[in-house]
Length: 198
Image 1: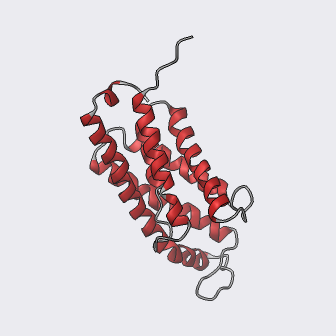
Image 2: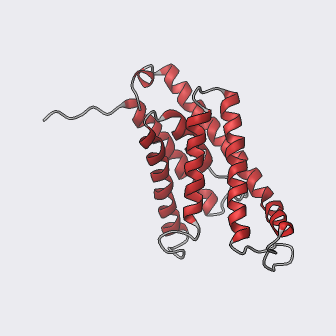
């Protein structure tokens, strides 16, 4: 029985995502000083932009996120959050939305398209994630009391989430530069990466 050839384009895209997902570990272990400086936004955009098949565009970035979450939970946090952390489904939903942005906004890989998608992804992550923090009874970091269930409490939640949104945006920009820039350079050097569909 003949062995099916591995699509080199698919293999390189997936390998880049796995390498970048591994870069989450120093941030999770708080080795880096920037909370939320994460590659997950860039991973979602990259997968959405380069995987031609819709199921691959969503499945492989989500699978990479899931595996890296498990590794971080087991080896960094010693399993104290159980199998998955609280509210994981919200983060995975936001991540799926980011993959959609990559598929929709980066149909042509260009600096302006990637930059715009990075900004939209960061703002979406901030608005949705912090809304769920507020709605779920998050803490006002000034007083350490629960956030009030009114407009002022929501605004306070968004205000205290701004530094995390900034770091998430910086992570999107830096890691998108690595992923998109690296793969575009690889395609120029190795034309076989352009010829096959991922």
